[in-house]
Amino acid sequence: MQWIEIVVLALIQGLTEFLPVSSSAHLLLVPLFTDWPDQGLAFDIAVHFGSLLAVIFYFRDDLIKLTRAWVGSIVGSGMNQEARLGWAIIWATVPVGIAGLLAKGIIETSMRSGYFMGYSLIMFGLLLGYADWRYQRKFSANPASANSDEYHLSKTQIAVIGFSQALALIPGTSRSGITITAALLMGVNREASARFSFLLSIPVIVLATMLQSVELVAEPLPVGWGKLLAATAISALSAYLCIRVFLALIRRIGMQPFVLYRLLLGAYLLYCFY
Image (cartoon, rainbow, N blue to C red; front, side, top):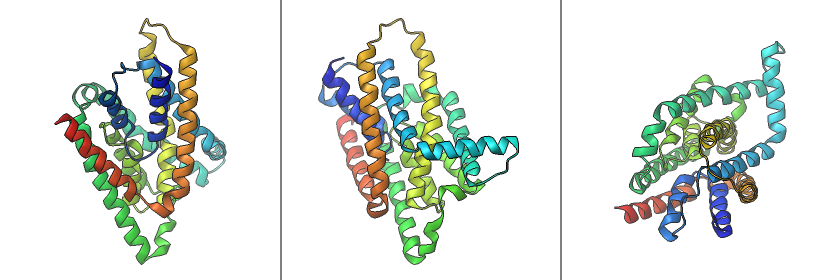
């Protein structure tokens, strides 16, 4: 791979992984404008690992508290709000783990077309727009209703968000987009919906990276470690910046700008692949 390919692709991955706009759809755009070859499995692992490092570093203090509290709940130290959140992340990850193992072949062969992604961007974008509009309407009528956060999720909320995350396996859906949508529909406030979505990404990216690593071992191909490390660093830095800016702005701008962007991108993909 050339350095320009590494920089552009790593930036796309880092900037779109945590936004509700579908990173897979953006990577699909690259062949439309360039003649670059497929980046390969090793590169995919590198940029996803960079995204993982970014979200872990951003939430490092929270993760330490969650881990201590979660372990404490197992050894009999009681159940506080951090421990409950730790368990919520685990239980909400189960559906996507099972769905990923069962539907992996179908998703990779039948749902990777630009046409399919275009429809997914539009359909789930409209659903995100409705969820955000509904939340804003409810908040305007009753400001106290915006106090529901990630530390006080009910079992029903955890289940709905967890099962919605399984839909993210559909290309063009956006994992962050569908989990934020579900959380908003279940009455969780905007910032908490985004934070819980980002925390949920940690076990998902870990599982996906482990699975890809097993596949990589079976590929007898040379690995350019220097370029892979650069891709990881670029993805990590851009993803960290994305998380920081998104969480800082989400209360003021809401989800509608991302909904409009999804509709435009989806329409463009349909135009290109119709």
